[in-house]
Structures are given as structure tokens and as C-alpha cells.
Image (cartoon, rainbow, N blue to C red; front, top):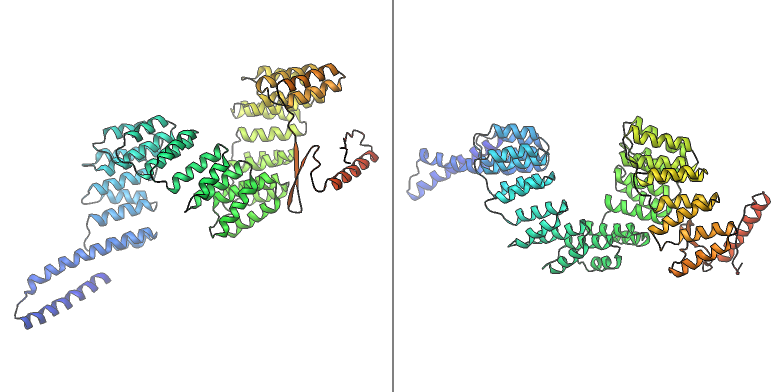
Length: 591
């Protein structure tokens, strides 16, 4: 109403001015002819202004205000109706959008395209296709919208048929199909389309490069990247991701450092690459650089940072990351909470893991699996089982990962019967097909319990060939229980799978030595030398005084080596004084 009153006042003022002008100039303006013309001009301007306002209100989320303005408009055009139809579904009110579309006095191709896009956005692709087929006329945007809808639901064949039927295609049509084929793993079809494109833009190049990277075809991605006329941040980020997946961190860093502009996705790709490749220190340093230039951490950044802290077992850095999470209000993010559980577990702070889990408002399946695994890794099988049962009561059905954790928890404390019951429940109650990891857990449990023959029988009855880990569990137990015959069987199968692994040679040699079979010891060592196999050094680490200390067997390069050996001697004497007689400590010549 206010808009109409203002318009009327403007109209009266204009009429008065024209009357004055006519008296001065001698020209006569007939009001009865002038007023309708002015009203028409005013109405057009008024409708345009209201259309713009409706769009602004919808973008701001003021749905009721937009509808009120629509209802009060004395005149509306097709743009008005289309603005309301689109505004409703973009704000999550698809049914209102649909009802309004049905009540439109007139529709144009924009109206129909809006309904197709609205259906696609709400996951109703079949209904979208119904609108598409009912359209009296279509433009290229109609075809592209429907193709994108099919691709969004992984219905690549239907999208392909539409693409073939299109009367004309543009770069958007081609790029959408290239992306769809690449995401389905049909990279050859994607490349074939790319090659016949007459006009390619940066998005076309980037989509195919990303497709190669995501399908593990990094060499082809690199060759295409070299041919790309103008590199953009998305293409470079895809290449950084590819380098990281190939373990080529130096190449990734060269690409990263060579970028003049880096967005959040690019920073996250590099930080995540470092974390996933076990280079936690570089990940944390890069994260610090990102903060220094004023970029705020997002969900992906902090998940990667927590992964790096887990790799380093650095509780100090993990707690600092937790502070950042709270500071930026991201503690409600489930992925971050799950990463927190893992980080605290890896750093030995299992109570903090439990606290992080309890602070999740709506834990998902990954959350439950993570907390069960955390307690299993710490050997707290009762807590692991308690959370496993609580998970089922909460309505979550366990999957193979869940059962692997609880089986591992029971195996750590030698609960044979409980483990067998869980395995039976997994297969018969939940219909989960056991993987090699499940069998490895049971075989490890049976072997360590001294039931080596039963473990061998389970290996023979498995529906697939035993892998390296399964034979490794049997070999380790054979060594503990001094069963040379089964140990030889396990070692032979391990070496058939990985001839360059030093573990089977070392364990078998130790078994022969314990049994006094020195000729066999010499034979094994000779075989190692013949095949060029070298013993891999094991190492351990611990965080002391906010610094991670690494230890390697036989290493005397540590700056505090004398103090370390002194403490070890004291512990050894203390253990001997308390009747811990099974002590085998070998001292280096420097002690």
C-alpha cells in the first residue's frame, strides 16, 4: 500500500508540473490521455522494483515478507511469478513452489526450468523428468538442468541418452557429461568427449584432470595438466592431491609454493597430504603458516591437524587444536569430534577420548566405531564391550569395523569363548561376511591361547586365501609356544607372499636358536643374505615435556643415551629384586 501511495503522489506532482509547463509553453496536455500513460509507466517501474525486492527477500531468507509483497502487488508479470517459484524451493519450501507453479496464469521456459531444477535439488529426479517431458518448449538450459539431475543421482546412462538427443550442446553440456563419466570411473568416455569438444574452458580441463586423479591415473592427469593452457587454483589443487596420493610430497610442495593465490581447499589439500603420508610435523607447520596469514581453520583443516597430532602422538599439539576447535565453534561437527576421539586415544589420553565422545550430541556410526576401537586399542575390553552394547541399544547396527574392534578387544585379553560368540553373531545374526582382518583376529587369539591346530584348521576353512597378516599371527604364536613345525609352515607361506620381508626370517631363526637347531639358524641367515633381505629396525616413541622422543634398537645417537641406559639398568635391578626373572636385556658396548 505504501508503494502505491508514494506512486500516486509522484503521479499528481508530475501532472501539476505538466500543467504549469503547458501554460508557459502554450502547449496543452490532456490529463485524460496523460494519466493512463503515466500509470502504465509507473506500473512497469513498480513491478520491476518489487521483483528485485522479492529476490532480495528470498536470498535473505525472509520468505513470509516476500510472499506478502507478492500478494500486495496490484500487477505482476512472469518474472514476479518465476521469482516466487524459484525463491520457495531454494529456501526448502518445494511444495509451496509446486503449488504456485500450478496456479500460474502463464508460464514460460524459465518457469519450467525452475521446476526441473527444484525437483533435482530435492532429489526428485523422476518428477523433474516429468516436468521436462511436459515442457511445451525447451532451451539448452532445460537440457543441461535435466542432464545434471540424472548425473547428480549417478544415472549416467540416462544422462548420456539425453546428451545424444540434445538438438545443440554447449560447453556446460560437455563438461557435465565429462564429470559424470569420470565420477563413475568411465574415464575413457570422459576423455573421448573432451577430445571432441570444440570449445573448452578452464572448468572442462579441471574436471577431467580431477577425474584422472580420483581414479588413480595420476600419470595421465599430469600429462593433461601440462597441456592445460591456463592453470587455475582448482586444477593445481587436484594435482597437489594426486601427488600426495602418490607419496610425491616434494612435487606437491613445489606446486603449492608456486601458486600466487591459494584458497582454503588448496591449503587443506597440502596439510591433509602431509598428515596422510605420516609427515605430521610438516602438516602442523603448514597449518601454523595458514593461521599467521589470517585464514581461519575449517572442518577439513582441523580434521587433518588432528590426524597429524595422532601420527606424532603429540598430546600438546592435539590439545592446542582442540582449543582452536572450541574457539571457532566447531565442536559440534561430528567428523571433528571423531578425529578428537582418535587423537586422544593415540596420545594415550583414553579418558579424554571418552569425554570427547560423550560431548557429541548425535553420534553417528563412525563415532561409535571410533570409541569402541579406542578402548580396544588400550586393552580395556569391558569398556569396549559396554560401548558396543550401548551402541546397539541406541539403534545403531554394528558393521564389520565394529566387530573387528570388539574381537580385537577380546583377543587382547585372551577371551576365546566371547570372541567366538561375537564372530558367530556377526555372521549369523547381522549377515556380515568376515574379511581377512576378522579371521586374523581370531587366528591370533587361538594361536596365542596355544590352540595352534585349531588356528590352522580355521585358515584351511576360510573362503579365501590367507594373507600375510594371518600367517604372521600364526608364526608369532608358534614362536611363543615353540611349535617349530607350524612355525615353518607359516613362515613359508609368508615368504611366498612377500619374499623381501625380514620378519619371517628373523622369527624363524630365533625359533631354531631356541630349539638348539644351529644348522637351521645358519641356513636361514644364508637365505637372507642370498636374497638381499635386511632386518628392518623397529622403533618406539613417547612424548616427554611436549617433545616426541624416538627410540631405535641399538641406536646410541640419542643425546641422552647415557641417562637412558642408566634408568634401564635401575629398572632391570628393580625387576630382578621383585622376582621378575624373565629379563633379557642386551647392553651395547657404550653402557
